[in-house]
Image 1: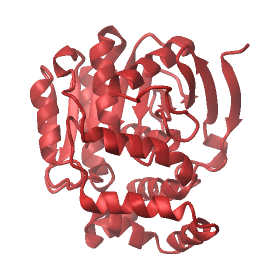
Image 2 (image 1 turned 90 degrees about the vertical axis):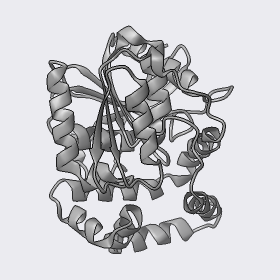
Image 3 (image 1 turned 180 degrees about the vertical axis):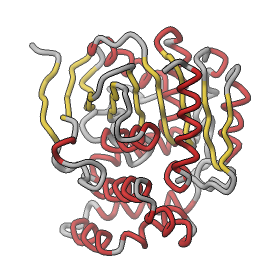
Image 4 (image 1 turned 180 degrees about the horizontal axis):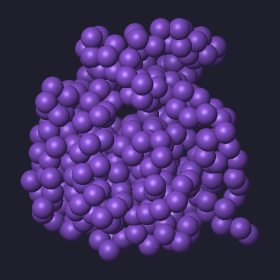
Length: 311
């Protein structure tokens, strides 16, 4: 049987992010550890993108485009982590180490020896675990607003998750709310950013605006299929064991806003402190969405980091 189960373009990926003609095909690839949903697009060094909570391969694509631009010069592998969209939860727990092994298995199947790994938010622990367990296979590590240890999830986030759980059980309500959000993107952006003026400024940015809007829209698309992974991540943070920072030898860039209210700035500081030789880029006044609100600054930092890698 072919290792690749299917290759189907997913037309539901937000057209605000990419035109339908440029939307990468969505793959379901059988690995020795299970089937992984992902896209695989572009030429050049491999770049593995890992989404955060409420995510999936589509948000991994958004992360990659935010960091690299529309013409990245990389082979971008954007995947759904276990429990998100088309990547089913593992039989046991979905620990960072277990996820890291799945990433390595996917790379084996795709014939990729080494990759730069980039993660955002809840994708951080599995990215760090991969870099530590597969040192020779991680060419570089980029951590954007990522958790680096146990995390007490803010009450407003827990309330939102409970609301989402209720929302997916009420027939017809989700499509209605999706249409309402589409009519007033500035409201959703202000809620995500936390500062209406900064949200408006971000939406007006020719690249950051469409990226942030695509991210917000994607959350309500296939919401029920994003919840198992989101809940597993959220509950796992409460008892997350110490991450294997000492095992990471790849060049590392940690980017974190010092006003992040979802994943406190101390998490970025810990990653930079515990990973030998890591660089910390502080985004002054940046919140959890600093990837978008400070897009130009973040991209410049990533561009300089990749240049140091010779990429």
